[in-house]
Length: 284
Image (cartoon, rainbow, N blue to C red; front, side, top):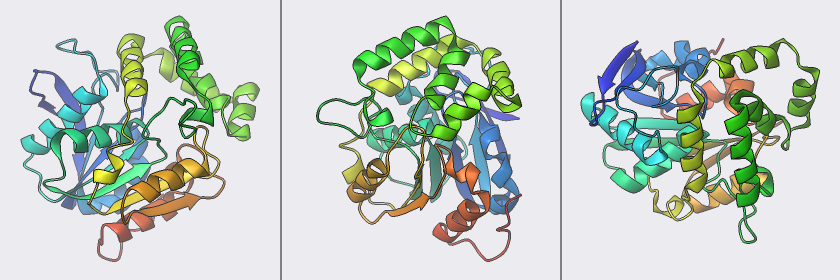
């Protein structure tokens, strides 16, 4: 992997591949740059793609010990863009990556950014009496406090249960069946250092980007699963209504990772959104 040094001396690992316009892809919480691997052949045909392991993720030991807060990750994104001298960059974030991108836009603005993509995320994860568009529609501060205690006890199982016991019945069935996929996910999560991930979650659930949505002026591409583990279709529509001129795509039957569920469609629509030339659109 390649790497660059953030402004606090932390080494940020990433993959760089392809030729063409710059495209930065930001993964979700507890994930890595590998989430984007299935899309590489078609996206590399037209884009120079930057895929990082966000600070605190990917199994990379920290050099400086800084908490991987959403504000710190947004600053890391700013460092990445400056380090590689990127101009007219397109940035797509899934889940935590979308929160990181909203924080980046709040802190650093849209200068040098051409296109934005947000995949299955709410601008405010926690719910309250006036905000039903967060996790599950009823994941308030008390539920989050209980979940964070579960993270401290067993991060792997808590993460799996968060996805399983939400709005997608198939995810619940898969978890209860405890098949090979769940076992492999549990094994991967148990290999991670839980402390930075727990600290990161605390930052994500403290964040609120509802006011930031209406400041966005760049072309924006929104992808949501209509059977997301965490968010309702109303959440997707709420976000789309508040980002002027945004393009909303609802992926029927898909969960919190709709782009992985419909890879070919996602690649074709993203390439069209970025106005990439014809060809290279077949996802594996």
